[in-house]
Length: 160
Image 1 (cartoon, rainbow, N blue to C red):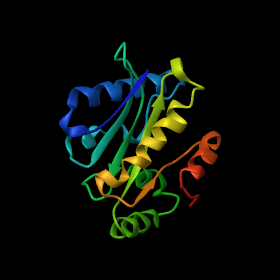
Image 2 (spheres, one colour; image 1 turned 180 degrees about the vertical axis):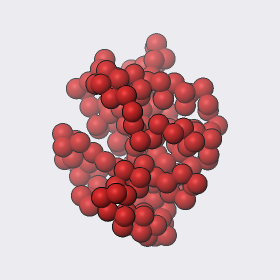
Image 3 (cartoon, helix red, strand yellow; image 1 turned 120 degrees about the horizontal axis):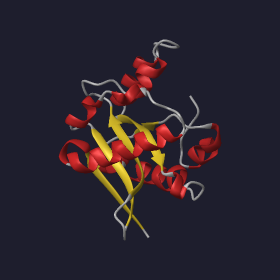
Image 4 (tube, rainbow, N blue to C red; image 1 turned 90 degrees about the vertical axis):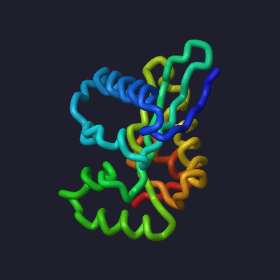
């Protein structure tokens, strides 16, 4: 059975570290050793929320994601990732933030142990959307893979 948790990263450093280690382990399994969000400054600010799926019996984290709110001293990962291709991303994020707050759901992962069960692509994405009203944002940005784009659309995400 899964246990879902959402918490502010700076208030739960031990659990935040578990999330980070789990994410790194999954990325390394796919040969990814450097990511743009490797700067961990976000862990110290009140602008990042972590979602985790944990095995209720073993307490092992099986997946997770991070919602980073716009307006912190750290740009959203999507801003730095897209900047060289289209610098209008900064204006887009600023506009969304002024229209009720925005953030980015990033760093979404699930362990190979539960791959194919939809924990990352369906369950954790729904948790991210569900928590939006509790963290006072009206929009949420995300990069999604071609395999999960239809699921994102079903949750209200639009292709930009």
